[in-house]
Image (cartoon, rainbow, N blue to C red):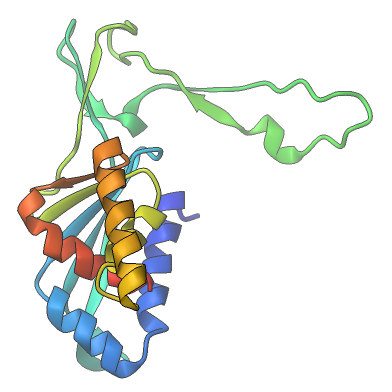
Length: 197
């Protein structure tokens, strides 16, 4: 089963497939050779998009593929353990269902991650570090996938829509809903955002 972020990555690819051939080529020519890491702040996962030449329907074509990675990196200050969010211990959560409600099979299978070191079982010694793909040209940290679309709106649509998008992007960056590293790759993020539009 695909994770939530992999479903979002598929949405990006379907957005590119839905474009006309001319628009697809335009976006792919701008993004070809780039590697974009997208990390959603509310998921413990990062997806990395590779814009490269792939075989599509038996023919070489400029296209995009993605890979999913667990994030963030964790380290225990007490014992030196290193790992990712998926390495943390998990335990089943019990739900109290009121009488008369239908009890779902899924309620018995829900697990919750416990934020404690799996080696020394301490909770207050873990510290977090953002995971960065070594090949990524730009790392985009967003609170929602729709934040990415705001960047694409800066170059698509009439002038009043672009101005509104500029205000939204500036507000999102100042508020901390979006972070771009390095910021000099802003143009790459803007082109990446056009995939959703």
